[in-house]
Amino acid sequence: MSGWVRIAGLGPGNPNKITPEVDAALADATDVVGYIPYVARVAPRDGLTLHASDNRVEIDRSQHALQMAADGRRVVVVSSGDPGVFAMAAAVFEAVENGPPAWRELEISVLPGITAMLAAAARAGAPLGHDFCTINLSDNLKPWALIEKRLRLAAEADFAMAFYNPRSASRPEGFERTLDILREVCGPQRLILFARAVSTPEETLNVTTLGQATPEMADMRTMVIVGSSATRKIERTGTPIVYTPRSVPE
Amino acid sequence: MSGWVRIAGLGPGNPNKITPEVDAALADATDVVGYIPYVARVAPRDGLTLHASDNRVEIDRSQHALQMAADGRRVVVVSSGDPGVFAMAAAVFEAVENGPPAWRELEISVLPGITAMLAAAARAGAPLGHDFCTINLSDNLKPWALIEKRLRLAAEADFAMAFYNPRSASRPEGFERTLDILREVCGPQRLILFARAVSTPEETLNVTTLGQATPEMADMRTMVIVGSSATRKIERTGTPIVYTPRSVPE
Image 1 (cartoon, rainbow over the protein chains, first blue to last red):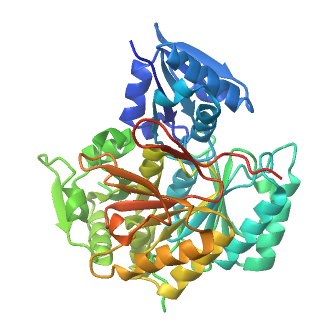
Image 2 (cartoon, chains in turn yellow, cyan):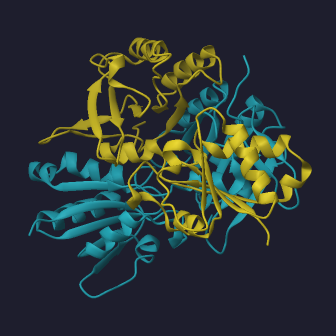
Image 3 (spheres, each protein chain N blue to C red):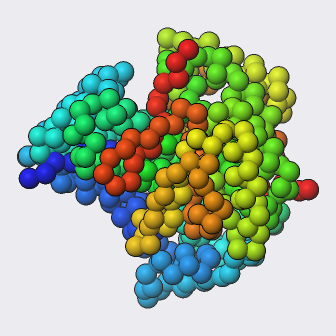
């Protein structure tokens, strides 16, 4: 029997946003590997071993998955959202590149999922309906200076921006600096939205402006989306709709 | 009976990448509206009227959908990929903003889908595993000067880049200019991949460098992804894996 690794996206939370392809991989797996809260989203069954591990051990987890596949097991590595966006796919390929040559010949595939920024954008309207950029605000794995450089260039390019991991409990100051930089470059009227735990029972959505935004509006379960200069708000009963038009006039 | 509009993403092509939420909306709809090839992906059934229309009539189509919902019908507007990424969601909200006030109070929701860049990235490995930007290369709805400005700033920010609509038959010169600019700013060794018709029987994947890339490698069914300076290639039997590591050293 030949083993495989499928790196699968579980989407933002609600099972109605998990693709049939991912469900089929889980149904066919012998082992599921992932961060504790994501593995908890997989239903236990006979013949399936769940291997839940803590945060920040992504390479150990990847090596474990690859070794099991090399031993003939059928392994699903789960991520929330899409595995290719600030999630497990890059970690698995890092482990492949630095691992034994045989791992390169394993059957490894990535099964895309609904990533958090697109779930959040859908909930709000269409803020990413024109050109945009996607930045991980955590400085765990890159220097803060690079984040700041990217923020300033993205604002100059007039991209809408989606921010993952905006504010950790241990290092909340980065998001405060992000808001300061964006207020300086984009002005206080620029639209910003905070979408927390989209598609779960804890979902909240807050549409405001950079001038009104405060760092406490975000935590690690929040997607933050900042509009481009063209992003607009449609008022109606309840939360307004936020969207970025498709056209930029000459 | 109260009507609604659901703007739904059909994913890149294979039905195994359509979420159950989108299937449920289609099952509950009275009408489906969209561009001809996307409506063709919806199975006909009794009680469901399919309204297929040509490209470039997005606002007419949106107004039609909104008017039907105002008349009590249950309307799904279909896009390929994700409706919020260069697709129908922004067009519908544009029609809402410019339409009669009653349209603002309609039940309108966006159901996310697997967008082309994430399906292409998954197929190739994890080229969008770190910060990236997403640009529509068509200059139908924006000036070419803005595209060029964004390309240069995105390269300076060292984003990986995903390009939608890289090369139309009527205006192929834009993509040639894009390659020239990127070669100048990023150098000839930078990785680029061309993923065509991902998840369909016509799927092809071509991994090369800017120095080797030619404009003819792309058409309107191709997603083009250009790596950042950190993007790497893992050679193995068959197509190599392309991924962008999670870390940027200090």
